[in-house]
Image 1 (cartoon, rainbow, N blue to C red):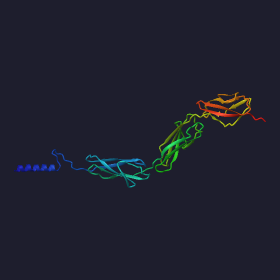
Image 2: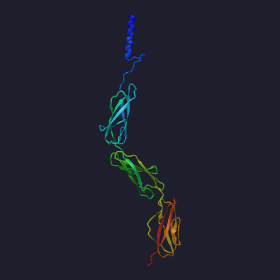
Image 3: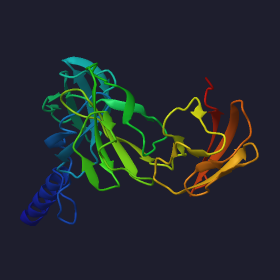
Image 4: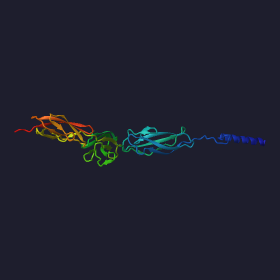
Length: 306
């Protein structure tokens, strides 16, 4: 009888152990679940601006290794503005404050809701929409060169403009105004000018807008305006007042002239004799080494007779 009692006690103990979660192989069944927890949250970027995207990096854990999902609520100046892991700050302004409440979940239990640090919306740099340079053709004879910009500031700040000029890719010009005078820079035909334009709101500057322009060949030009040239019929000697702004050599030719006149092809002196007693016109063409030319018309007038 005692033997049967011992067997019964053993069976009852075994049954009690099974009911308390022990498997037949001796391991304990895990019937409990714990909520996930957040270790740390970092907002990124840490200095958001209007129009930027703000998100976060979360370091969290779950003792059972369950997948963690997050419920995120964003607040701007303590007012709820949206949900989701990231948010675009289209409506935010400089000085606004933003933070988020994050609740982790493993699908069975929600963890403790954690609030992020508060980020302050910073200054937004101005933006350049377009730019241009004037004149759009630069010669060695060009005086002032000006760059113009169009832009806006998302924060509504007043924009001022500054420009850094570079000559021939290396020589920085010590003038940050939007207009420079080229007369004293020693530019030559083929010189390269870079304008690096910035818009400033007094706190930050925009990304630069680059404009590049080359000094091109200049056409021959009149040195002085000449209405009429007096002449002696039996001895005309008229150096035409044509120069080349790039100091290129020029070739001269007579396009229109009465018989008896000729022109020196190298120095442009018109000479010869005429029998005419009334004013007459001549036309001279001066061509530089790049093929640019000027056609100039002059009136030769005989001396007045008393």
